[in-house]
Image (cartoon, rainbow, N blue to C red):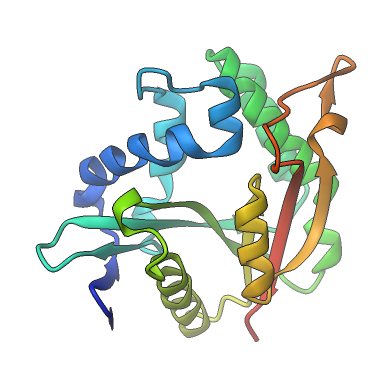
Length: 220
């Protein structure tokens, strides 16, 4: 646990699920560039996206920022991922099985991201990493250092657990810049206009969000 100015960073718990979902529906669900471009959640609802975001909570690797009244004002949801070529295959299979045509497109982009980054080849001596999967901050609490504090607390925990690699995928130009400022290295970069299915781009977010990227940081 760490105290940072007006908020406190604590582990994110399973019982926080409903409050976290409310925060995500006001932020990540509608603000993330891919979600925003295709209006994935026009009514604030997308069952497959909810499952995608919430499924890592049981691992105990995620963190929340709370204000002095205990309200969650920021989250970083993290997930352990094996380093092998099976992840991309699984995502393609999941995309094929998706019943939501909009979320299907996002899953195809994630699958192509795995196919393009091929991290298992770049880190042959590691068998897993932890991905910073979903980040969100209450709009009233932005620019107060919440995400930086959540990342620092996560990195501290990963070092304690002997996890060497942290991963951050970026569909946003702003999060890409933040990753670079925090010593992450880009291992995959593709223009959205070049990420296609059947000859057509899957999703092309509005500028300045031009590239899909994968960043990795070696913690030790």
